[in-house]
Image (cartoon, rainbow over all chains, first blue to last red; front, side, top):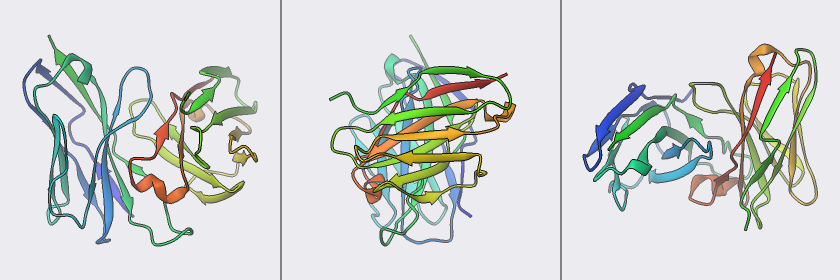
Length: 119
Length: 116
């Protein structure tokens, strides 16, 4: 069974600093997707960034980038120039790359990291 | 576009009662997935509905059931509530199940269920 582990329950940094959130996963599959979601106090999950395992290039979205190490099964999120609005729970999630309509399209989630950006 | 809407936002029920949670997907989306998020934990997949049928199911007992209507909205029903059912219930919508692989999945703000 696939599992996702986030070993940092809480992190705190000053505004404008760079912070890295860790995520490791376990799977025997070769093709899959990895995600980072943000859950602010409003509770709505918001997709931050997505990585396809068969792509070697690390995904980037503005201030957000990932360090994807497939052999080590590691998928960390780096937030540059952190802003107060980045304060939220961050979840790492995994999904197998399905092959058809009967495939498994469920997301498997880590326990989350609470990120606090201090002014 | 209102996005994904869930109702109610908060709910308090007594052990043994039954509850129904509702989800309206984003306009144009036809697939609804339900997740249970206990306090301090990541979400756990309950089930997914597409074309008014349950397509996939997570490791949840039969007390958890659902339905999808022709307008793609969905309900999650939980019977014989237990204290352990207290959680945030999230609904996610997408255009077909496979869209969950990409950026086309949207989440609602959830229903906070408290069982006392």
